[in-house]
Length: 429
Image 1 (cartoon, rainbow, N blue to C red):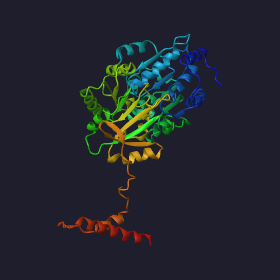
Image 2 (image 1 turned 45 degrees about the horizontal axis):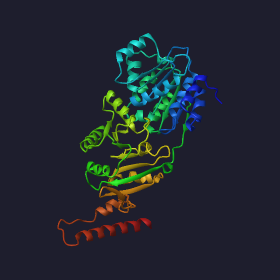
Image 3 (image 1 turned 135 degrees about the vertical axis):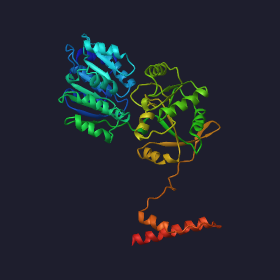
Image 4 (image 1 turned 90 degrees about the vertical axis):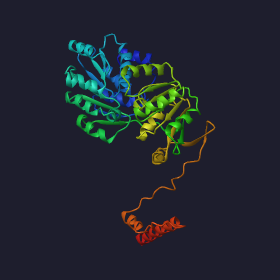
């Protein structure tokens, strides 16, 4: 049992912490023991406080040097960690210097202040940290005791892992490294092998999607323009608050313009917006000024937004785990949630994979502006069978004629079927 500092206990009581979550119970003691960790845990599991609590427990409040460095892939996530950290630090009788370094801030002022003093805790985005550590050489990262890489898979997806690598290379080889991630992509393994020493791998089991209060509806586009199908879907719902997810900022811009034209109360959030605009949009969301928000996966996890009634996937994410992250933003706190995804024929394998992982899917059609049960997606009876190269060659010997006569197609298909049958009988002997 850890005897936490008095101000940590006061902070947790003010934040209404009753019990530690599973990830906090497993991670905190190991961090305090100085172990390197690779932690996989999904959004909403409490992993931010899993590293913040031991940071403050081990922090030397009277040592005014840089002790802890936290990297987060987006400005919004970095800001959120900063807010959580300040909530705890404000209870300390000794002032704690925590600084946030993200794009769009007052760089000259930051540089001037760093030349005068070092913060005790730094939270920043990879590009900004690289700028201050590598280019400007202003952060004394060789003094850092613990380096935390948060949302490592998103850091990789956004192309920022190289920046993190540059920063990590400037640190002392004996420091403690903690990596937190929702998933464990193969491409992150080289980074782990390079910087983590005999790491302890902690995996927190994911919530069973079937146990959440989410109805997963799939609406087939049937060859119609996706934006037209979206318009029809929007006519069928009246959400408390809905997020429309797109895979790219370009498609998000298109969807946003469509919804503005259709007079919906909608906001837009993606990485292509300037920092001030993104901040304003998030403020409007939290103040419940929108009914809809069009967003990319920048928002699919980590950023806390309450009371989301609907998730609409204008495009299915390329990674099925991101489907879980997106839809997991609704159906929380014992409330019902609805996830509506547009799909076409090319998405069959993707949906098969979701269903194989226990996701209960329902297929819907739109009739008179109402979502009604549609035909259950076929069991893929018409899937193309995988055949050997030898069989493909056997099939290709069936001649095609340039003169199409009545019944030609049926006769040709019968010839192909006969060749397949003969080939398989020979193969099975």
